[in-house]
Image 1 (cartoon, rainbow, N blue to C red):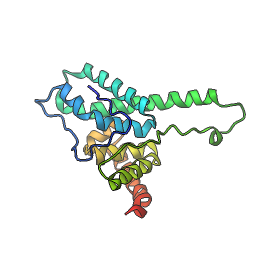
Image 2 (image 1 turned 90 degrees about the vertical axis):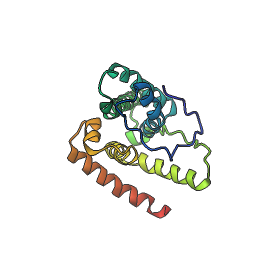
Image 3 (image 1 turned 180 degrees about the horizontal axis):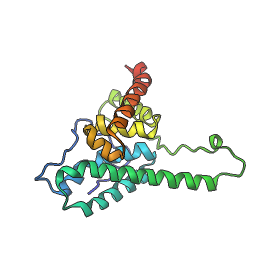
Image 4 (image 1 turned 90 degrees about the horizontal axis):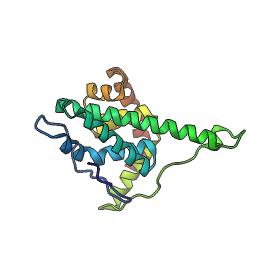
Length: 191
């Protein structure tokens, strides 16, 4: 199902988001969404291994929904993956609390889980733009990052995004607006 993108894999920027069609099999759907799901998970977890595990777990859980109509797969998959990412983040925070020496504050104990290695790309400009976008996305609060990724990068509609995020459509619009504003400020100098 999920093909390991491996270290240094270039994002497939030209591939449009995959919408589940009624004639599509679940295996085809999962094969088409794997790379984008990995990038989404990696942005949230900042770890290639954790991202691969989260996507694989979400794909395995999707197998239980094989009989559901194909039009429900996209929001369902993103909702499952999002919940898995939140679970992994909670476990990481819990472990960090126990690893931190007593008396050490939150700011002092924060660790950077990001994998600094970026993969090769077709051109330097594309590599640099992607790195800046990922860095800017990581700087956003989680809900804004999720709203932006699902609405803009995955091109889900507001209703599907709201279902995937487990919030109202108004909340999706608010998070998206704030995310766009923050990203515009961060990436303005890059233009």
